[in-house]
Length: 206
Image 1: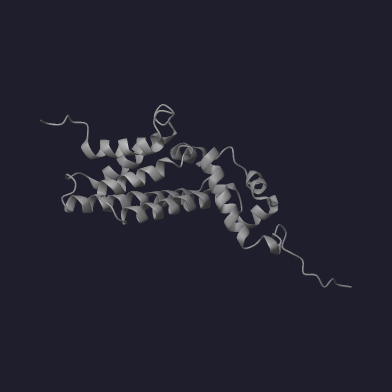
Image 2 (image 1 turned 90 degrees about the vertical axis):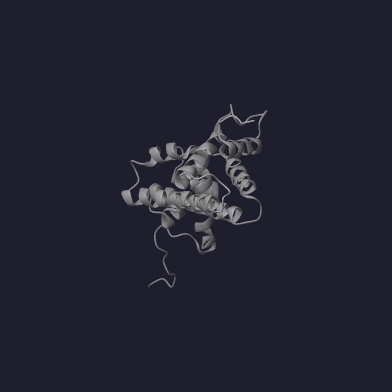
């Protein structure tokens, strides 16, 4: 006699676990990868942090490279949208840049390039390209901001894309304890970075 019960797909999560489970897995994986890097995080680590089975993670994400890629795309999209909200909001150009820097620097995490190097052997060319393209969206966003500021006479003429990369690179000091410590908060360091970008290193002419 056949059972009236419908068998679940192997590894399929219980009904009570979806659809919120996928969002929870993605958010949790994003935090874990950004906190610990690629090598120290496994699918089992993500499952335990979410209180679900490892099979549930595999149901949504085929392997570690997939969840890592999706996690980075999620983080970079969030960073892009938050940056866009600030630079398109109120305040002077300098004030908006300071707010972007403050928000970026208070989110301490492992070095992005180090994490990408750790993962590169497991990632496909398409996965790497998708992450790099999402990363480039942030640089293009800042490039447009700087280009408009130059057109409006708020900044001296220079290469706006180079300026965008330089600004983002300067903010990577957030993980350096010799820079951000008990004597200097991440917010203070953010303001100093924008001031340096704003005035340059040439002495003030009197």
